[in-house]
Image (cartoon, rainbow, N blue to C red; front, side):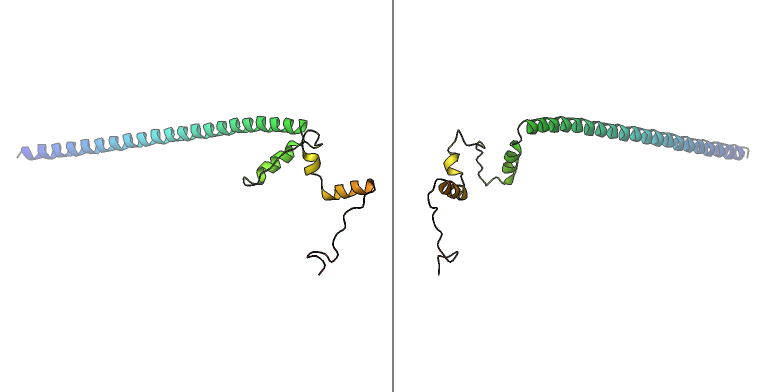
Amino acid sequence: MCYRPKLIQQTKLEAEARKEATIQNAEAEAQAKIIDSKAEQVKQQLLASAEANRIRVVAAADKERLQGEAMALKANPLLINKIVAEKLSDRIQVMMVPADGKFFFANDVLKSPAQQIFRQEDQGVDPPTRPQGGPGGGR
């Protein structure tokens, strides 16, 4: 009968050891979760820092590009017309000619009919008459 109290004592000790092991495992898991969360926090801070740095680099590059464009436009204001013409459409064909037309056939081609009429009047030539009655010929 002496065997029974020893068995009870041994069972209690084993239960106490299991309880202690379970507590130690839970504490180790909690420590691991804390370490993981701290690592995730550091990772997020590094990613945010990298994104902020990327934005700064892109902004600096954009600033330099815009300054270069501003200097080019300041030196050549007619580039604005070219930029607008380029952005119209890819199906529209645009031809850029000098504004004075000295080195191009633009003197004859690009003059408006109104300028030709004024030039003829200045030279004493009667300008061509328009048909009466508006559009459609006089009917």
